Amino acid sequence: MTLAEAVVAGAGPAELASLEVPTRYRAVHLRKDEVGMFNGQTKDGQDKDVRRSLHVGEVPMPELAPDEVLVAVMASAINFNTVWSAMFEPIPTFAFLERFGRTDPRHDLPTHVLGSDAAGVVVRAGQAVRHWRPGDRVVTSPAYLDSQDPIVQHDGMLAADLRAWGFETNFGGLAEFAVVKATQLLPKPRHLSWEEAACNMLCASTAYRMLVGERGARMKQGDVVLLWGATGGLGAYGVQLVRNGGGIPVGVVSSPEKAALLRAMGCEHVVDRSRFDDLTEEKGWRGLGAEVRRLVGEDPAIVFEHTGKDTFGASVYVAKKGGKVVTCGSSSGYDHAYDNRHLWMRLKQIIGSHGANYQECHEINRLISLGMVHPTLSRVYPLAEAADAARAVQLNQHVGKVGVLALAPKEDLGIEDGRLRERIGEERLRLFRG
Image (cartoon, rainbow, N blue to C red; front, side, top):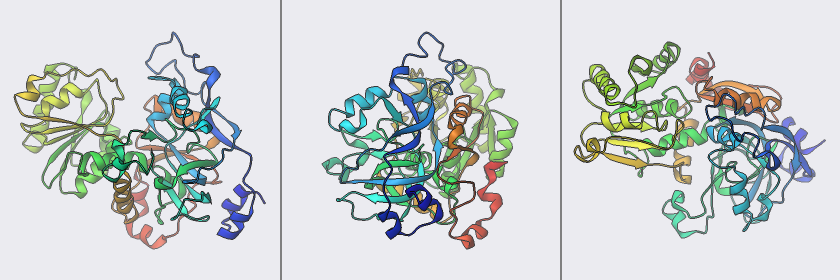
């Protein structure tokens, strides 16, 4: 029996430790010699088809560092950083690997294994790892950093060598095996299947830091929160956190179908952005602000931003006097434009937020494990079709999160706590599955 087969069969710690680690494994990867394949093409995502650049095949197994863990990946998920990587934008990720390779040559390879989410089973632990052993069922968080950097004791996201695992490092989660730092691991929620557990951590932890964490917007009870892309990977977790924390979510979506899903989540106030004029102009901003006031009677205390160029001017405008715009990304473009008078004269704040530190990841994983925050998984692909999964995300043909099965032979495996699952209800847990 191979190590992968033993994991799938549910082998115990002793058997897992006794089996040989393979020298090669299947993974979704990019090839360094294809970096220029999209040169001269437009950036609209229509012809930079990620199915051309993403490959599924064997790659060499790396050696473990003392503070690292080898995880047999049962399932993973697609994030926008996978799409950016496959489009080689804003820069090819091999530039990250080359720079990292100056201190850790293992990562500077002609292939880049992608993926910043995973759920699986620990099969090996480095000599310095104290809290994880073969057989442990885990989920991964994406922050890859040096735990001996003093700033990590304050906030790991300020670390000088912070890297996004599977984006700025090699050996990511879209694979049969993944190499992670011990400080990336958390216990798998026992009531979730492998694919449900694998889809949460990057987006859910990012939303937690933005809205709840001490370094984010610090939402309080009664706060009106405007959330762009409210049925997307980030927004759907944001809506849940706002509702849990006593806030008033106002979700922005782009279709009646997404509006219906948002209402099924319990979000009473929904804005269809297609009803408004150009949201890069003040006429559109005014229309959006008037609609929010019509729905809830006041301007948003917090605007949950991640779409960027197409919406940022509107976000600054509609936030109330003294309000906050918290941003973690720019999926529609990094070159933001806004009227600064509406920022300084109305005493608003823009808060930059990036990922989540280990404690914040622990907190959101606890909420998921308690059944207070639910997966937003909408569709699942096998590893062999991971490029199609990424293409769906590239073209925004999805809601919530798109999962990928790695070693798990089918969906709905890995559930350990059926009682909690029954209490929550399959309808709630599978809401995004349609």
